[in-house]
Structure formats: C-alpha cells, structure tokens
Length: 391
Image (cartoon, helix red, strand yellow):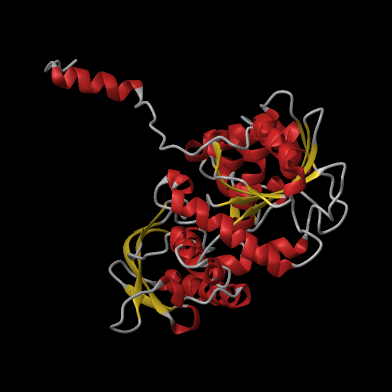
C-alpha cells in the first residue's frame, strides 16, 4: 500500500529545519512532483509532525540501517513498524552500560539490533503486530486516498463506513490478505479521482468495500479552487477489536487465532539465528500498533499468564532448534516511552544470564498509565477563569 504525496514549497521549506533529513532525502525530490515516501507525508504537515521529525533528525546518525529504512519507506504500515525499531534502539542507547547498534543487513532474515552490555551480548528482533489487518488498513489509511488524490481541486469531505446488511459492521469480516487490499485500493483511487473531478457540493457517493464486505460513503461538503486545501473527516464505526480478546482463550486456542498464527510465523523465521553460546536471541513483540485500550494491559495477571502459556505452545509448534531464547511483549511508543510485559524465558539453562541482561538493558520497565502535565498556557487560563480575571 503506497500513496503519492505532493512535493511542494511546504515540504521544501520544512526540510530547511531538518538538515540531516534534508541531506539524505532531498536528492530524489523535485518540486511540483509527487513522492511515495512516507517522510514526505510528514513534511506536508510540519506543524503536526514537528516533534516526530525532530526525533528522527536527532537520532538519524546513530540509527544506521534503521534510519535509512525510515527515510526510504513508502508503505504506511511498514513505516510505523520501522519507527518502532527506532524507538527501541534509542531507548536502549540511553541505558548504561549498554552498547546498542543497528544490525547490518546480511540477508532478508537478520535481526534489528545488536546489544552488548560488556558481559552479555544479544541479538534483538522486533515484531510489531497488527491484528485485524484488513480493518486497520481501512481505518487508518483509506481516508488518505481522498486526502492525497491527484484531483486538481480542494474540498471538505465526510467519510463513513456502512455495513452492507442488517447484521452490522464487524472488523473481522474485512479480508486480511494484502493482495486483496492493494487491488481494492488501486481501484478505489481511480474511482475517487473520477468522482471528485466532477462532483458538486452536497453530492454523496458510495464506493464498494473490499469483497463487498462494506460500503464507503463520501459526502462532499465544500469545494475549493486550491487543491492544497483538503479536510477529510472519517467517522469510524464502533468495533470490538481489543488485542486482549486474542489471549482470553486457552493457550491452544490462542495459538490458532490470527494473532497466534502471526507470532508463530515470526518464530519460524528465526531472524536471530540458531542457538549460540556467545549471545542471546531476543524477540520483542510490540503491541503498540494494536487496539489495546489501556496502556497497562500487559501488567494484568491473567494476560501475563496467558501470553506466557501461549508463547510456549507456539514455540513447541515451531519445533527445533529453539527459535529464540527469550520473548518479551512490549509497547514501543513515541518519545522513547518503551515499556514491557513479563519476559517469557525459553532457554531455562541460561535463565540467570537472561535476567541479568533484562535488568541491565531496562527491558523490565513496566507499563503504567501516563499522566502528562497540561500546557502552561492552559494552566494560566484556568487560573484566570477561577479568579474571574479576563487579562
């Protein structure tokens, strides 16, 4: 899944504030053209994405291959997964005495990060899970078809997913096969551009969903001559896709659902290689891109137990040799806010060494509900309101 984003004055001006990104990105960008790179999407709205762009700029030099992959990524889903790798890398680099470096790619099955604490070495692979991929694809990115259409008009549009029958909308009804989704996206792009070119204010158009599992209803509210003015509002349907649901059955049942099958496929790739006495092999299961409700869900006792038991069932299915020495569930978030669930130690003969590595690297930082300080301007406004001071 890719989109073509305009390379305009906004993008080129924004790049001036990020010289490292500019140096590596600007060579292939020409004004008045379009680019598939996700970085160009961020640069099209520098006010909204300034903190993220600044984060990438700050750590680009130490990010190595991970940084390069972020700059060159054209797929929105993979872009988020690459960012998760950067978040963990930066988090680990902030720990003393940890030496964390991006792994140099040797083939298609290589780890993401190499760790060295001085006494322990480890290879780390990060897997960012996405459950109900078809629904997440639609929910997060289909409005981009309207936002970045090559139609030469600006507009305000309301979008809504509509069920095809009386049974209602179910996230799991949408096909998960990437091939089906990409074919639908290509057809939708052409149909949307054709409609937007001639549509009038007040027009409503319905587009068929993937395999006719739903309809996409678009309502055109305002038209602008300037194609740079576009406001796309998506009214998301209610759905129950909480990731916890995939760990509420028996371990054997959990291993067979869509999340269990994805984890099994990842285990079988053995991207950190075969068991080796000189280093540990770590798999980080990142749940940040899933619908999880509360941040601290990984700390719930029944979830800890269920993940542990499910992983062990999946490891048995993967067979010999042992795919990883340790599996750690995690939430890899922006601003290096990385937190972790209970580690599943698979190589019990090296348990002492594994626990030492976890402590040294901070891979045991627990997830807690974040309470951020409100902006100082808001605090001052509330104080004025309380004292009836209009100034």
